[in-house]
Length: 249
Ligand code: SF4
Image 1 (cartoon, rainbow, N blue to C red):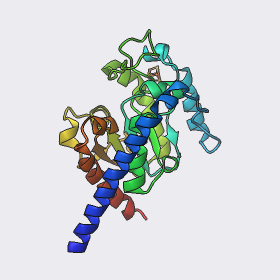
Image 2 (tube, helix red, strand yellow):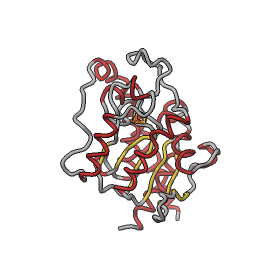
Image 3 (cartoon, rainbow, N blue to C red):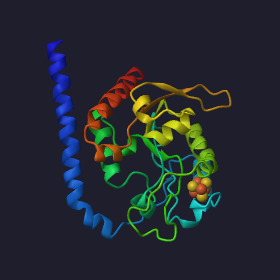
Image 4 (cartoon, helix red, strand yellow):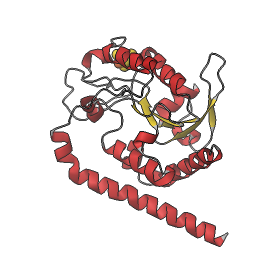
């Protein structure tokens, strides 16, 4: 028992150090990364089912809500279509809008490190998507300005929700991890905040009589940037996800 506790403490310390190192590295690399964001290729590769490629094309052409007018790039999703775990965030920010891929800024680097250190998984092993596929901006006339992010409105969420439902229907993961309050509230139809919901398994109901999918709410990586004390809670949430994934092997 004492050995187990000592091992867990070592794992936690290594995880926190890895996250801190990532943030230091991200901060020093930031000017170059932001100076020339390289456009990424379309998110659906040859391994994607035809239906998923068609869905990605629909999203790239979508103007169902006002976000489609101001976005630079629609951000469909990234990862493998055979993922056992899907991470769901709120919506693209500045960097994601410029690169067309979810979670590519500092938050994304932190998410990558959390996946790697706790779950032993890389971005290519999972799938990452957002509740809305286009960048919600306070000032849509200025997509080049920083600090221009805002949460999506209920109407924008309702307009975009069918795309995420379809993605989850194609992938049919064993579990979903929601990152932050917005995706947790949307997928679980709850008003409770993330601090009440995190760390407890819930059931996401895909509808159409399909089996519920286990869903673990946890903090958005951006919250860890603002409040480093949340790293430990996130570690505990991800350890529960790892234990669940272990039952599938
Ligand atoms: S946010 Fe969703 S619904 Fe709105 S334009 Fe973009 S893809 Fe379409």
